[in-house]
Image (cartoon, rainbow, N blue to C red; front, side, top):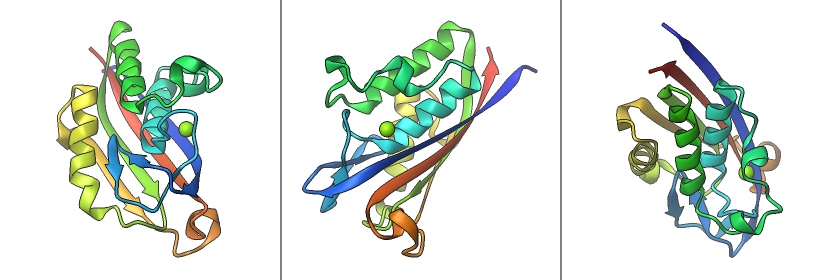
Length: 159
Ligand code: MG
């Protein structure tokens, strides 16, 4: 069995009045991520984990944040492209586990829909996609509501 593991991490600063996209969904929120793309920090960490598993660099290398092509882009498009790279090389994502650290708003009502959305984009079943959310108990930049932080781990296997 040929398997590989990948780890991804991303942070975006939050600001009032911006849309908050997480896990492919628009979240009801007074704050959103400052970003060149739609700022879906969960998808960015997931993409980096997948790319990392296959040593294909990172999201910034594939989708530069100084390129007009990616300005305001729906991050689901980036994830779809990353999955294409994976399959072209003969690999498949076995599972993904994502942890979102955000002080507010509460993400619990969105978790199942995020899993379903990400699974659909990735072309795998939703029982292979875990999304978890935590606050940081008001500690650090996440706790102060200044940013959103995401960790992702994926396992890939050769087809
Ligand atoms: Mg990012």
